[in-house]
Image (cartoon, rainbow, N blue to C red):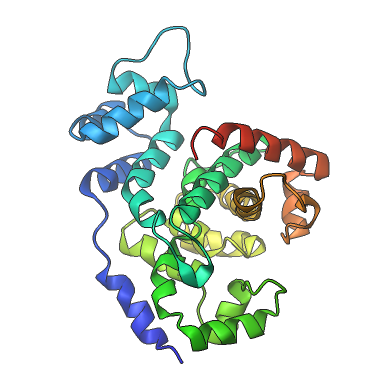
Length: 292
């Protein structure tokens, strides 16, 4: 039905991550980073420079005086937003392509990615404890594996996935993918991130997006240099943000937030009740209104 070996092998044929974005990711993934080194890379990329300055002067970050230099923008924004910006610049074109196999029109996947990343940012503010700066970047890339998986999903495979899922609207989830294909989009996305030499925090965060409870066990070996509790918190945040972001991207009036299909233990660990989740959803809609 589908050659899983061929699918996995196709990860190795991916175009390399853009050099400037890859260098920024490498610099910002270190325990401490040199502002000057990051500034030097960004200043060599006019498009990235323009986007960075625009973000630093946006209503979200702007202070009393405007930001006119890349160095000042990096200092104002911090590692997390700059990392997100670099990865967004590298992946936005691919995320804007249509994916008919997943019933996603052109731009739909990008809308999901932005909404999910914003959800992770706001849930992260609510969560108790430290979060790695890669959290919002992981959230942006949660569905990246679908781009590589979609071309392998012909009519016969789609019928099997829908039958396995038995979802009333014909949708299917990662469990159906695993049952039918012996692999799912989160695993493919993690392999893509690893092929791009992205940090282990991002690779494993993508891989465990649907299984946050596994994070404390996997973290010590798979994510060196990050405290297991911080990585576990990242996985809880992106797990909930993924479900919330998808719902908000598809449903403007936020119907059904009481049934997102997320692990209730993740909600408990993040101290997110219905009221808090509703408040996050409202703020996500406000913040993404001008972006989408």
